[in-house]
Length: 140
Image 1 (cartoon, rainbow, N blue to C red):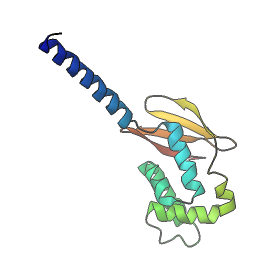
Image 2: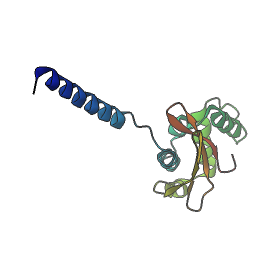
Image 3: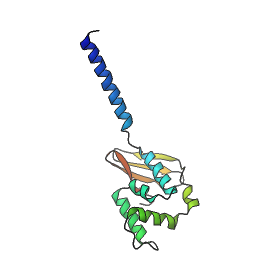
Image 4: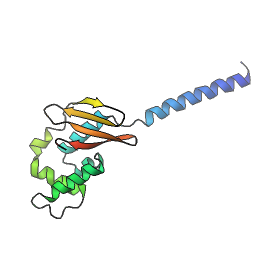
């Protein structure tokens, strides 16, 4: 093997390895994985995490709901609104059941997806850059 051929083979091998490494390291969560994270955050009453998994419009709906609950007139952030909402409607025993729900993909296109847990209303997601965010939960 000539030196030029050896360099060519080595370069091709390195390029292939770099491509494969990049594929593995930059994978973004699937709609199902986002749905699992959503329900896990709900089970843990983690308002901050739920807000990070939500679109800006979904975050505004959380704030609006929180402001209409008893004690919510001063709520101004998504996390505070979710925390108040989960306390109001949840309870640790009820929320804890959501930690290990099985999520399945109902539908998916390039820009939108829907996932659903058994005996639960679906979550609708939209693609935002390289990730998926919940745009509607339950009735929206």
